[in-house]
Length: 164
Image (cartoon, rainbow, N blue to C red; front, side):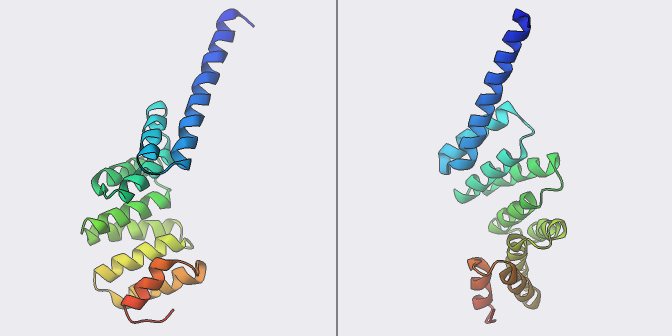
C-alpha cells in the first residue's frame, strides 16, 4: 500500500470513528448534551436522519417546538418513509396549537406504520384536540391493544370518559 493510500485510510478511519462517537453520544445522552452530540453528528453527515430525529426529540423535550419541527421536516425531506419523524412533528405541531398540521402528519405516520402504538396515540390526541371524540377513543384503544402500558392513550381515554 502506498503512503498516500495508507494516509487516506487512516483519515477515513478517524472520520468514521468520530462520526460513530458523535452518533452514539447523540442517541445515548439526553438534554443539551444530546443536542450538542446530534449537532456534531449532523455536521459530519448532513443526511443522518436518526440524528435529526434524536435532536428533534430533545428539542421538543425542552419546549423548543419550532426547532424540533425544523429537524423533523429535514428528516422527512431526506427519508419520507420515516413514520417516526411524522409522528414527532405531529406532536410538536399539536403543542404549538396547530392541530390541522398535526393531523396531516399523524395521518402520514399511521399510514406508514399502522401498527405503531405511538403513531396511533398521537393521532388520538390530535383528534381529541379537534373535537373528534369517537375517532380519538378508537385510536387510543387501538394503541393500547398494541402497547398496553401506553400512558398517554390511557389518560386520553380517561379524559374522554371512555374505558380501555
